[in-house]
Image (tube, rainbow, N blue to C red; front, side, top):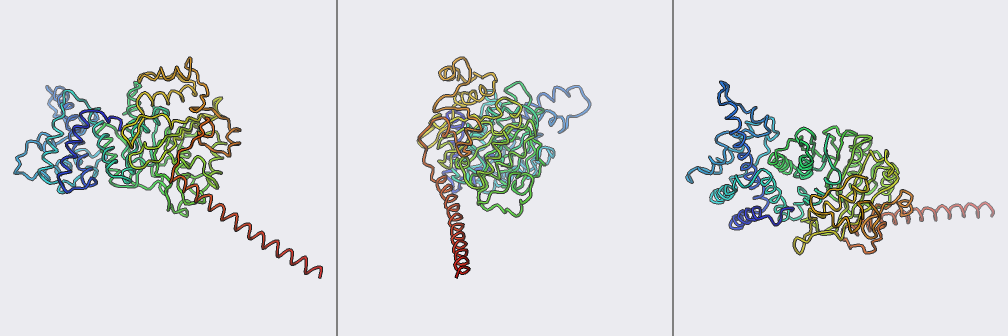
Length: 522
């Protein structure tokens, strides 16, 4: 949660969570309706600003403004019965649950082009009336003059993170830690073209990409086109609300990426970014046999990591596409058929940067992970035969006893290491210059033992085609990762079993040949 210490987000969360504590609601029952109210408050705020502007514009016009005039400004049209002030001022004798449901339906109906049909929450009959009234009052206390749209987006992101934390393992299905998303975006620098997240969750990659474009003097509404896939309906709804609350348009579809390429994204995307489920099992390999999105073959083991990796690779536009994604730590050293796929990727000169991330960055699991970066334009550079390895396991800010994140300065510092490797200008808006000067005098990239190393493909081959930064930067100590251990142990055990079977077959063949020889000489 990048705004962990922000007063307004914490105040609102504490108030909303206290209301839930005094009810019988589970966090999973409470999350979506609460996020819906934040969405409604923000949509109403943006509508109010647009209405003032449009009313002045039509002051002397015979034509009355229409929904289209608001949509041209990138604003949802909010009908009277959906206005936040209308709901807030209803007498307590009114059916407030029904009124909020009607408000959500009204927004969907009045904005058919916003891709919100059936996306806004309607479960308000589950929220006790007195709690719903208190929530409306709590969110109404945000000072409109003091806080702008970015604050509402930050509130939404903060609540998403808090709900992910309280949801436990299930929370990981829809939320990627903000600092990991921001680091991916800062390294990829998505500033134009088509952007895909085929495991988009609640849309954090899209939000941060739009912020990057706008921060670098671009226009996210016209410079990038957003495409997402997600196979959980409630998560698709969260994503659509998240985009809307940030004023972002995107094409988000409910489909299973393993089997359906709904956006026709093969060799099409300028940027691909994702946090797919780690070590997923149970993919029906018969259904994906021959799919061109998996050009290096289907892994023989029951693990989808290298299906996702190929999905990202094949979606990149030839000659210019880039990808950045989160991946299980074990994938960098996986053996067997996965090693063969990884070897082909390295030999294709597409692997650009690998970053090790320490444990406790995720709110739901303690696993360390890795960030992978591909670049299809790399073959045109002198770095085509090299890969930059960064070990960032000792770079973090401790949030609390069990959770870590990157500070703004640390994100900029790590991204600047990559920029120097790419021979680009570094940035210093977050104050990373002092850190850079210590390790990289003159702003020129150099290998730093224990932190970063540029390795050639030949060096990678001598390391058994491993993409684990610890193998190259000189880090000796590996964190123990129970899930990765069992993943590797299972793969090695399967390989041992295969070798044992081959050994037994060879023994039988030798015995049979020996008997033939003995019988022939008798």
